[in-house]
Length: 134
Ligand SMILES: [Zn+2]
Image (tube, rainbow, N blue to C red):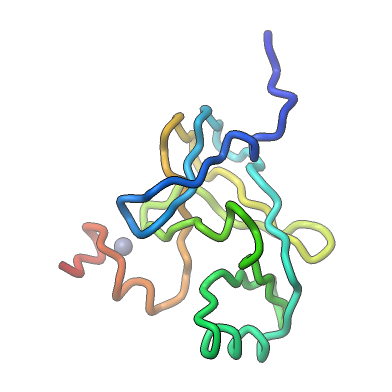
């Protein structure tokens, strides 16, 4: 049996998405509950997060619990992950001010990786069947 020793992250590609702008896609099969990549970046406070969102239109910030936020604007992959109500990935706690992206179900080669952004406004823009913002 051949085991994948290389990091799964190497098989994650940024491509144009049907959902919005760019998205991240897997070129390999990923079984459910697999750690796909580490989400790390500049660690900032809630106030700084708000400032960057408002003044810099930064939409690449992940909440990491309490007053801790991770700005992924300088990353090359995770910042492009799109929202989908019928998502296939979750974000979980990591060590050292980081988070992990894990698969919430089996994901097939070619599928776009998505998460539930989890903030209210997104459901006003989401174009999926259950949000129905046509
Ligand atoms: Zn939706």
